[in-house]
Image (cartoon, rainbow, N blue to C red; front, side):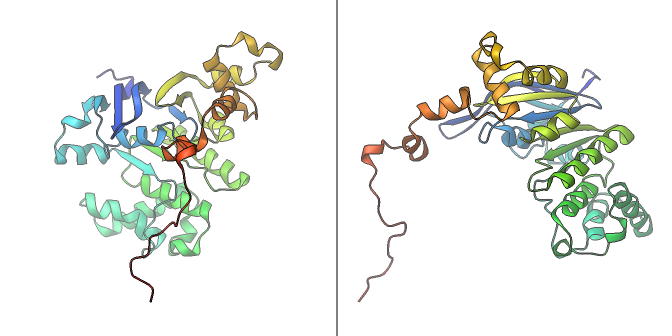
Length: 297
């Protein structure tokens, strides 16, 4: 393995039935960097994340973590790899029947031989890192959405991972809390030296935390470059838009959130009903949503 890269995705193809979600993805993530993966809904970014963590297998191509091909590992080997990364799920994914501290302790209890006293100390350290030590005994129902994200991050850190995966870390949060999560990601990356892969469509967050950025569209990589390069494209003058090709115009529209551009034209040119339902508009007839299962007398 090239020691500069901890994640290597090569010629990756993933299909579900007749639908190809990822079509020839190539992506390498450097040790210690924050890679932001972005794109519109349905572009394949969450599927790419699932392939990176080994919860899905590709139809073609490969995914390597720490130089090891995930699809070639047996269950024991895959479990060992998984101990080296942590995941912050979009909803936090805490166990509601456990306190915050118990959620964080679970991985250490399951995957280490540490004495419970050592685990308790480690839990306090992890919660302190995310600013939740004073809320250790609370249950998920007793804390806010932002605190759930922090608790989920503390749990992701419990085994001292080398890689952290974030699935929409700012989703559903107010602007101030979102900014706090962004700062927390930056602090953890700097202090712990972990590699971070962040899936998001929140542009303020992306430009705050990214070292490099990857833009997906229709299962393909449109652009993979530094945050500065994406920033230059976002700030490209409107009166010089014709200097950009269609792909770069599309990326610029996405980065700026403009109401007009290639993305809008694509939607206008598509037949919404046919695209949504898979049938021509003229053949669609409204009917009951649920067919009765018994005869009414």
